Length: 402
Image (cartoon, rainbow, N blue to C red):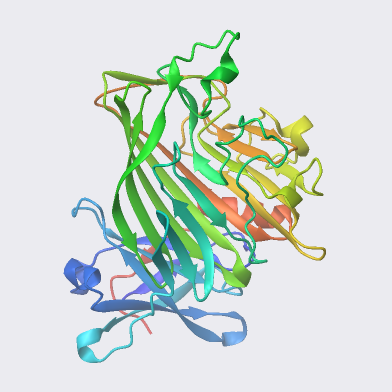
């Protein structure tokens, strides 16, 4: 098996996430062996002072069957670049031990699936047709408690019913709201909204366990108030458990118009929004909002551009957890603006300054990484953004090396 050569880069705290293209055919491995879990992969990592550890790796097949596959692994803390590490394959038919799929997707009652690592639930996807859009709950931090909540803790008017933990939305698409769920709140205003739409979960395309991450892929329809489908959305997620109960959640969203044109209107409400747990609030809960530029709380962060934004606060008398949203540099209007409130709201807002129209034959893609973390150290969040935005180069040598 080949050697992986990892380029030099800045030292990053904690585990490091690596992804690289891999040619299975060159290794004599058929895609069906991956799909049927007949072959698994391991990486021999070199730590300080000559210590070596073996960690599981995971291969992801390309969606179109033509591109190269992707190899992913988490290098433990203490593994520093540049370095060479050994890739090993293990075949079930030869009696080899395959990495255990420790990150599992588990269907649950009530139109929900959970992602579990070991005995701990990390993340849930809720897709009941009884609400107007799917959402993600819980989003558990290292404390074992969700860093998000359902609804505004002090609004009983129904105006924030749609604030369900962590979710995808946009305030105005072709003059239809896919954010609020109550049009009467706009009565007497100059709003151009014509109706309230819904985002309907159509079907799962993938639910996949793995030794490094779990994958979810689903197809959704953005349906207007007259029951016309404006958009088809392909929503791909990867959930990576980290040491100490932290996790990374990658969102890869692709939108495809189903009518001649779709316009995402200028608004700070959308695309990826979170309502944090009451105790994390900057207003009454003892928490704080911080962006990548060092701006603090609503007064400094609201409507400002930044590469990432974090909401952190106490989850117990002795523990602090947080949730950071990292925007990918290839996103439209990067770095996006942020709509934040001291009362517990945070939203990545790529359309804050500009609308965007796409035609039927076009697509629009957004990528975000959510980092659910211990503490509130901005350096660790910044390091996770660098890992996401500027991953270290990994190459495979063509010949085996000792």
